[in-house]
Image 1 (cartoon, helix red, strand yellow):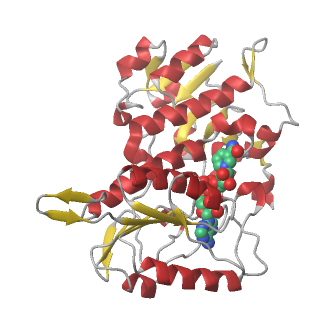
Image 2 (image 1 turned 90 degrees about the vertical axis):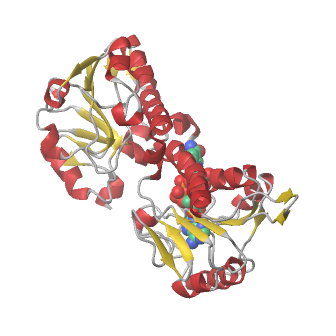
Length: 375
Ligand code: NAD
């Protein structure tokens, strides 16, 4: 049973899908672990540490040759894994909606692609959930990125030279990233408020010591779509939300937006006109920028200034914390494979009727089989 760990090739991707810690655990399960040389370098994991953990180092093709399981952070270019054997599992964040043609190519090549971001949000799968582990770090880093782009301080400071007031931070979208953004901004001493379409988040916002800002009394909205995710909102709701945001946003110094709807472009939460009402020197961090952006004018991979407001649009924010992001990502992959490890077979086995297997399996037997992609 051989597990290959590839060096990521996507631009700006610094994470790695296995750390020396998880390599050692796989070896402990009886697996042979092959690491593409330099795979962990940009996340501060040296080749020597993998070797000490019992893994073998080699070229990409050497690592791939004969591997039963290929681990990645992002899906590799199908041509770059041509040396993989038929039926090998590819376990990674595969961006199935955005990279549909790659999914087809994996099927054609006989690769069994397992998309870790399709992990169901159930208790049993929490320790395998890459979206949660990475969003949590993104929420934290978004606040630090905002602080770095802000020419003022976060906490109230009473100094001999006079008092500096606390920054007002508004978090839009209170999922995993938003909750961590609230907690981080509070730790830095900001006055924090937050909003979401799911009313269940109101209590969570309050429990973190922040103020909920919510659209009330609009008919025909539920907020909650399937699997605890947000759904698309009614036009009436969108208008009410825009009015609420307009009045609130003009008083904010920092806005962090994190709103996503699975399989759809990110909802637009801040228009150019609303931006214009903000104070000069304010900062917005748009964590949804790669899914189309919550903020009009946000540019993926850039910090732009509009109406005196800095809009931060870093791509792949978890990769900006590559060491810890890799550590958590790698544990998610290990937890998944270990949970399905069949000691007798000496490898993981996914039962056909298992909820997790059905949710994450994209391709099997040369075909695309995932319901969400076929729908
Ligand atoms: P997400 O990344 O899909 O979206 C971020 C947030 O944006 C969500 O809270 C969403 O409601 C919000 N949003 C969407 N449209 C919006 C709009 N127009 N205005 C304001 N906010 C908007 O969310 P996520 O972090 O992946 O979390 C989704 C759900 O999954 C949550 O209910 C979370 O608690 C749950 N969850 C469960 C588990 C588990 O049980 N294993 C693990 C992680 C998350």
